[in-house]
Image 1 (cartoon, rainbow, N blue to C red):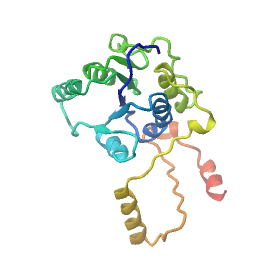
Image 2 (spheres, helix red, strand yellow; image 1 turned 90 degrees about the vertical axis):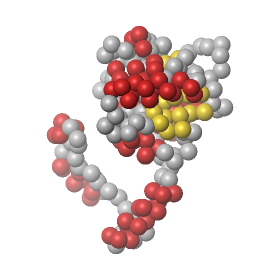
Image 3 (cartoon, rainbow, N blue to C red; image 1 turned 45 degrees about the horizontal axis):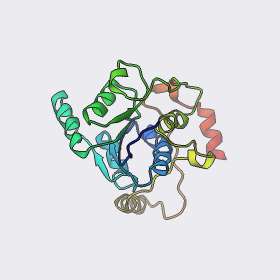
Image 4 (cartoon, rainbow, N blue to C red; image 1 turned 30 degrees about the horizontal axis):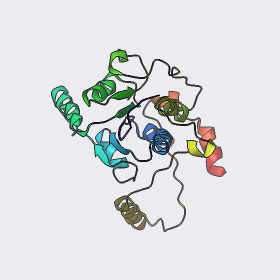
Length: 211
């Protein structure tokens, strides 16, 4: 992406699922390296917003209240214009997320086309189509590269999230109540919101636990 204007304010529209909202973090970090003096804000669903509220990556975290209607969403997203965003990264593929970026007034809006989103985005026609053979980290990184970021090395592809102080305290309280002590705890979650199509076979989980 080439521009004669500085990028000073960036809006990241987060994916809607917890796992994906971790996998998009390497792309955010690549953009922060590209624009080290810019401020970064996040627009996310309430649960995702809470996860990133005190992560240290975002100056502001915007979130609509649960159950907000269409008009409430319209007014809320249009209200973001007062923050004068230079760049919006639209990580979800939905029409509503691209519309939110357009309503925010961001000068440049980067996301994948499709779902009738073309007129709402500034960059996207040159992005590769989603490919389920690629890791979603790399698919999200495509957006950062389209916005001017460099492709990171292998270490830069690993997502990391710093828990908030309140989260650490809550974890310690739960550990004490459950008698889990203070040592290493490994949790396995062999399930999926989408059912068997996205579940790892039982034998694989058993092998992982033994390892």
